[in-house]
Image 1 (cartoon, helix red, strand yellow):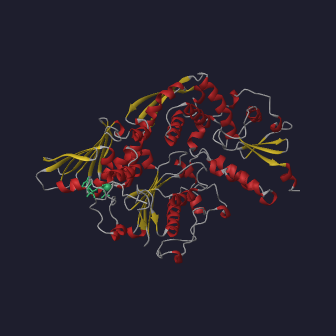
Image 2 (tube, rainbow, N blue to C red):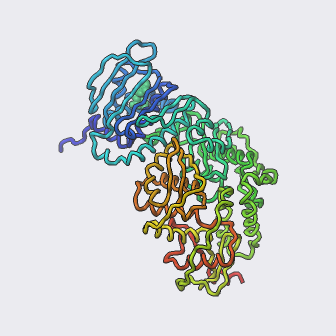
Length: 631
Ligand code: ADP
Ligand code: MG
């Protein structure tokens, strides 16, 4: 039998690598900017045309390349950053695989000008179709100016995979945000089709966050700082009341590199347990500094996933540091006085790792009275209601309720409205819900009594037990059906706002809002651009008119950004969902018995009242069998 194994030619190997490393314009931006950072640049300009399809240009003032190095740089596995295997364990550069440029040249045309500082001439190198077309000396400024043109032009299949410009651009912007957050001593400019999207000087993390995401985000940050022999963690976490349902800004960095780390993410989420609603996410920007030898960056081609040697110990340090910051800044609201329920600060076990000098007080508890005295952190409006609700819940004597009863309340505290100030604004409009008496038999409450419990649940007898209805979700479910009908029949009316509201967005959100502007107009929104990333809301769908339009629109943008799907029919359903959520009565709102009756009859007239459109439970049953077990 003849030998059949062959080595792949480099050109094919590059294309395969391109599938992993270069997936879209944003990947090129990442690789080129990381190269510029590695070259020691402190000024980096990124210029894009057509979301990077036509042109991605990165200009840096870094060390530049000699003519030979410029050519070598495009060879596969050519790198100046590691020389031997052991270097892999002391990486201080972003790059080290030496494949990015080779890969880029295999999927795009390249035009490079580069000159080391101190030289009088630089070199210009033009590569087409992965081959050097021309190289000659040219007058250049010191540094590197790399143009990547016509990405994937030679690969129609790959090009087809690219999304609409708005989506690709938002990927680029997200990548840019990650790069800008971690390279604070670099001045950045980001331009797209002749417009400057971002431009800012060297700064600190807090200032960068404000530059990137707006002043209001910058003002909501609580500093986190801890240093042990194992890891230094610095950065910021958001105040609990600013947690978002979607698209929360959540960033981990390690040794100057952005990373995803689901395990550490859970650590942070754990610190916010009971401080924020279950479906909300806190903001965080956390930077880890560790010995390069204690992490493995090389487990994923995009180097986004990183393995830590001392993950468990770092988990404990992280949780302690974040909790301490939340407690110190009085971010812990006083809804949970009960010591038994307070989350434990893990006592660090020194035998678990080499971090003996962690400043950890195992007796420290953010829920003790000195911390809980500061109810103010949550804002005034919601406080009496939340506190009242919590009293209700905890006054049920645990001995006498079945174990699953607890779980009915488990979500209660975590479902508080995260924006108490809006609760005053959002007034119930239950009155306009028409009554409807046709209830499906199995759900029809027996008898007429329905009562509200803990200003959140409606309890009513059902055919085979007690029905417990979540008032907010029930109303959301009812309104969704109504809104979707109105949208589909084109009945949704727009109502002018007496005082137009303004909405400030991040650049990525701005791009997305622009791309859904038309669908929004179809559903009754009247918005216009005020400036870069700032919009005026002149009119809103009449159905949500008094429900804080700016916040609803923000929720819609967040929702759209989270899925990144094109504007399509599903989008109308998403719009209806978000608007219904905004307009629905909130947990904590006290309802009259007429309101309760209307809500129930409306709910039970739906074909599928049991779940919200995104699958959250609306009605739970406490079966008779469970009840009789109590006696
Ligand atoms: P890696 O970054 O993994 O080394 P790349 O393919 O990204 O691999 O780059 C190859 C080499 O080209 C780098 O090691 C570096 O020596 C050189 N290089 C790339 N970009 C620049 C730049 N902007 N300035 C100076 N040198 C660069
Ligand atoms: Mg590189």
